[in-house]
Amino acid sequence: MRLDIYRRAETDGKLSYLAVPEARNIPEEATNTDWEIEVRAIEVDDGAEQLPDYDIENVTGQIDEKGYAITSVQH
Image 1 (tube, rainbow, N blue to C red):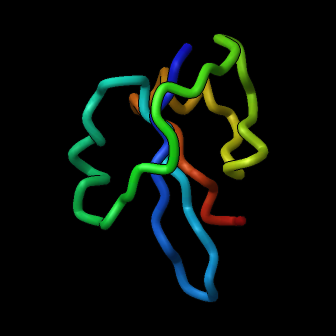
Image 2: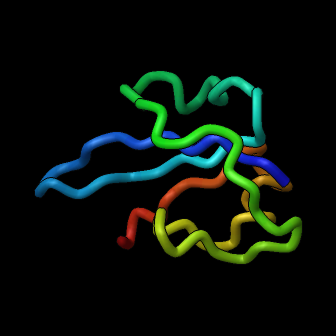
C-alpha cells in the first residue's frame, strides 16, 4: 500500500505522525491540528505492523479501523 505521512510538533520537541492512504484527505477528526506533509506515496507492505521511523504501531489495524494510523500517545 502507499501512504502519505504527515507530522506535527508536540510538547518537548517531539513529533507525532499520521499515516493516510495515498491521495486521501486527512480524516475530519484530525484536521483540527496543524499537520504538515512529511512524505507522499511511501510504499509500505500491505501487512505492515509498524512504521518504526514514525513511531506508528498496528498500521494496518489502525487503517482498517479508522482510515488512518497515528503515533501512539505513549511515545
